[in-house]
Length: 99
Image: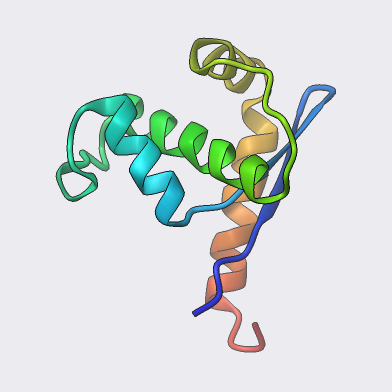
């Protein structure tokens, strides 16, 4: 199964998200716990995994990431609609048998 990159625009900044092995390693380094122990109901764990997916995506595309986790959380907070659109679009694609 191929891991696909997804573009995410928050405010005037564009990011590339990629949930791959690197993202999981980055999550473990950042959170101090195994990805298998991630609390999927925790906003902290979810925001960390999202950030780590962006770290991985930007690295994969050979682009620099100039934003720290805390700044990223603030950016999400002020652009929650863009994030929700990305998540809802992915859910719709998963339900569509043509994709």
